[in-house]
Image (cartoon, rainbow, N blue to C red):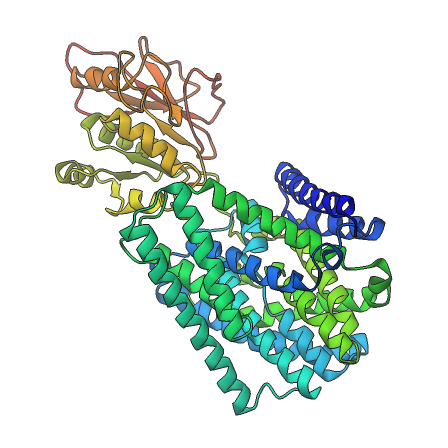
Length: 596
C-alpha cells in the first residue's frame, strides 16, 4: 500500500470507531451493534482498512495486547468484596458449566451444521465459550437489572474471557499439530495448568511494578496512567512470549489486584485511560469485521442462524438452570441469567487469530470459523439488545424507578430531612464521618451506610450499588463540591450538593461540583440556621395547597422518583405526588418532621 492509502486507512478506521460509538451512545444501543456492520461494510467497499494490508502479520500480536488492556480495565471494576457467599458460587458454576457445556455442545453440532471437521468444530466451540465485559456491560447499563443479577453477569463475562483465551490456544495447538482433539488428555490438562501458572506469575510481576509506580513513587494521574499502560503491555507481552495467550490472565489478575489490594494510589478519575480503552474496542471491532467478506457469509448464513437459536434458546438456559439450582435466586433472576450470553471482542480476536492459520494448514472448514463467529456476535448482540429490556421487565428483575437516596451529612437538619423523605415512602440511606453524627442517624431509625462507602464511590470503576441519587449536605462546602466530582459516574443517578454561602472563599466550592440544590436562596448556612431557629419539614399531598411561607424542597412522584426543586427548571407536581416542604421559623418550634 502507498503512504496515502495507509493514512486513509488509519483515518477511516479511527473515524468509523469513533462515530459508531458516539452514535450508539445517542441511540442507547451497544456499540457493537454499529461497530461490526460499519467495519464489514467498509471492508466490503474498500481495501484500505484491512488490517492485513495496513499492519500485516503483526496484527494478531497487536490484537492480543489490545485485548489485554481491555481486560485489565475490566479487572479494575471487579470488587472482590461483592463476590461473596452465593454470588461467588453462582459465578463459579456458570464459568465451569458454561465453558465445558459450550465447548462440547458447539463442537458437537458444528460439523453437522457447517460441514467442518470435528477438530474445526472444537475450535469454534472454544472460540464461542467467551462473552466479555465490552458487550455485557453496555447491555446491562441499558436494561438496568437488579444489582445481584448485574454483579453475576459482569463477573462471569469478565472472568470467562481469559479462560476462553487460554483454552482456545490449547485447542489451537492440539488441532493444528495433529488435526485431532486431544484436549481431554492429561497432557493438555497439564498444559492448561502451566499456562495458568505463567499468567499468575505475570500478574504478580505486574502488581509489584504498579505498587512501585503508584504506591511508592506516587505518580499523578498522567504518569500513573502511563505507568499502568506500560506495565500491562510489558507484562502481557512477556507472558505471551513465554506461553501463548497467558498475557490475558496476567492482565486481569493485575487489574483485580490493583482495585482490591489496600494502599494503591489509583487516580480517582482516569479519563485518558478510559478513552483509550474505548478507542481500542472500536478499532478492534472495525478492523476484525473488515476482514469478513460478503462471499464468506453467504454459505454459512442459515446454519449460523440455527446455531444462534441453539445457543440462545437451548444451551444458555440449560447452563443457567444447572448453575443456579439451590442458589437462592428468584425464578425471574434465574430466567434473566438464562437470557444473557452475548459474544464479544475476545471471540472476534481469537477467531481472527486462529482461523487463517488453521485454514492454511488445510483443516476442513477452518475458513468458516471467522464468518460464523462474526454472525454469532452480530446475531446475539442484536437479539439481546432488542429483547433484554422487555424480558427483564417481564421477569421482574428491573430496578424499580423509585429513588433510593443517599444523604451525606449528619447535622440535625440533614437527619430530619432524611426522616421526612422516609415518611414520604423512600428507602433512605445516610452516611456521616463523625461518630456522634452516625449515632444520631442510627437513633433516628435511618439506615447507616458502611464506613468506607465514599471511599468505594471514588474508585475509578466502582459503583454505589442500590443508590440512585446522592445528596451531599455536609457543613464543608469544599468537601461537597469535591465529592460531587468524584462520585459522579459511580452512581446510577444524579449527584447534588447543597449550595455554599454566597460570600464563600472556599478552594473548590464556588467554582465546580455537581448540581446545586434548592436554588440560590436556600444555601447551606440558611437551611441550617432556619432549622436551628425552629423551622421543620412537612410532607403532604401535592393536591393540597402548601401552607403560607412554606417552601418546596422536593417532589416525590407517584412512582417514587425524587425530584429536588431548584432554579434550573420548574418542577410541576401532579396528582398522586407528595411534597416535602420546609416551613418558616415559628414562634414555638415543632418537635420534628410531620406528615400531613
